[in-house]
Amino acid sequence: MNNGIPLQYFLILASIMFFVGIYGFLTRRNLIGILMSVELILNSVNINFLAFNRYLYPDRLEGLFFSLFIIAVAAAEAAVAIAIIINIYRRFSTVNVEHVNEMRF
Amino acid sequence: MEMNQIIFILFAAIIVVFSILTVTSRRILRAAVSLLFVLVSTAGLYFMLNFAFLAAVQLALYAGGIVVLIIFSILLTSHISQKMEAVDLKKSVFSALAVILGMILTITTILQFSFQATTAAAAEINMEVIGKAMLSYEVDGFVLPFELISVLLLAAMVAAIIIAKKGSPVSDAPNPDKP
Image (cartoon, rainbow over all chains, first blue to last red; front, side, top):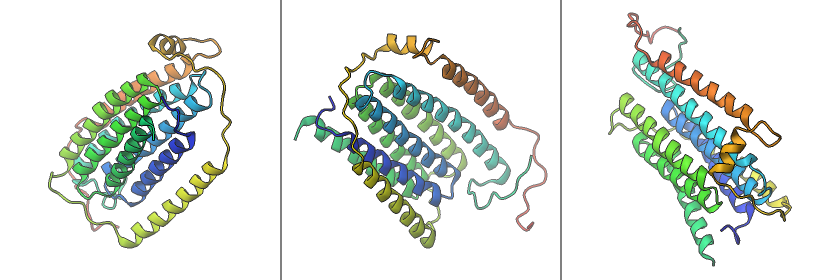
């Protein structure tokens, strides 16, 4: 199904996606925007793992399982991050990182 | 041009355009919907790579779970029509510069490296193989990361509940004048 598409195409696509995520991470000032950039970065890494698995080691399963575990960690991270964001919003009435500069218990 | 190349270029174009929209859109809800398009196209790429199980997981967990969670938290923390303030021009230019330099470096490195084509036959990947490998403690088994992930998910669930729980009301509102 993937004949005619070199491995490099997948890697280039994943690196573009990764660096777009980095750009969002650097420029966003909204906590939810930062969270979405992190999701983009994790997704590009998944594409890399699966493309390497399919093209270079098609008889193994490591890429598949690493992607599966990355997805699970991303889900856990999103849940905790959103809990923290909602708690921050309750205390500071904003989710802008510039205005949340005080650390409390 | 082959059909699968056309489909790949279509998915790639959707991913690039909508990921740029995700990080630049000033309406946060639109950014979340763009993220949804990116994740669905990524699932399409997984289908092209013949990882049907992972594509289904991607659709169910990312497109169905995380995006909905993000949209919920957006609706809880901001108004729908609210626009985020524009990014500082200087910061935006320097970030774009750093990102484009990194992208050029990575892509030239990828293009210079010659990946060895393999001759091994592709393994059959179905639910039975995946389930047996995940719970196997033999050489090619993944039972240790599986157990770690289950503990991590439990810890994350407890942490999310405790953090988001409504505690005692905070009487002293944050004082913006304080240094």
